[in-house]
Length: 185
Image (cartoon, rainbow, N blue to C red; front, side, top):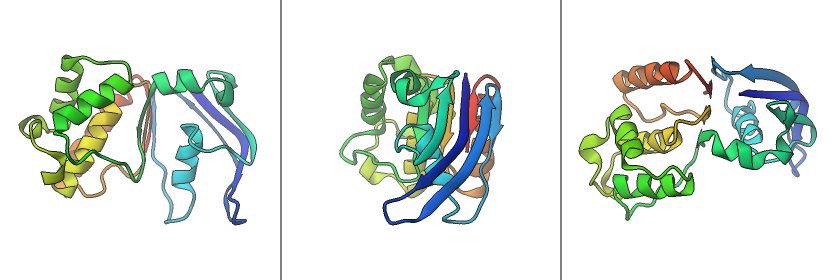
């Protein structure tokens, strides 16, 4: 998988320029971490790469073709954890992940079991999401991004709310994921 941006600019309706003249090329396998202060445009960049928003100017390509014409292909290969994500509090962890597998067309109990194990949520599988701590909720978000073994994994501040030991564990998990895919953090 290849993902690239050529001279991309994103200016919001308010006039704020979030990104200007950004070019990059990502090809699997790779892991890239975005660093910068709050408001630097990291989340905007990620939203552009998942086709959540459109650039003001410039081009984004997936496997050599315009992203705007390949959104369906992108969605089939994408695991995405936005900075703010919604969970259905009334569902159990397992029900939520089952719902997400149906949306990703990869419905399989083995897939759910694998991400529960990867994220340390096996013991919480029957717990209602409303009863989980902030760190456990974050792990549910990571689990849903990992469903279906996506070839492009984009995670916006994935370790927020995790304790230091868990942060290390998940950074190692993301590094293992990058062995055969694009991981952008």
